[in-house]
Image 1 (cartoon, rainbow, N blue to C red):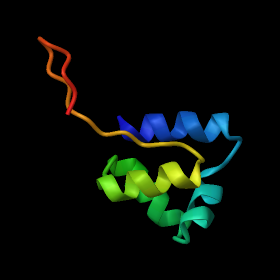
Image 2 (cartoon, rainbow, N blue to C red; image 1 turned 60 degrees about the horizontal axis):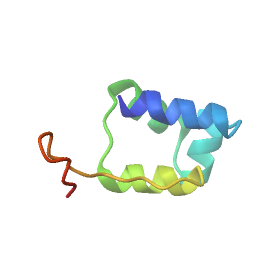
Image 3 (cartoon, one colour; image 1 turned 90 degrees about the horizontal axis):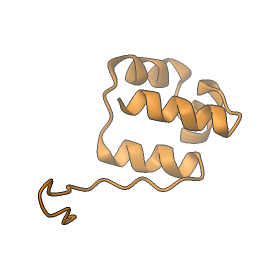
Length: 69
């Protein structure tokens, strides 16, 4: 789920996974493994968003009232 979104932004930014790894100061294999498992902490998603010049927003939205938390 998050991997797909990250890949869409990478395409939009004309960046590769290696470019992302370089921006995050980590190995390309680390990025590939995380994306393969689709396993990211909220902090990692915030850092990825910064590296991609984006804002990451995590929130809960009540289905009945649409109230956001």
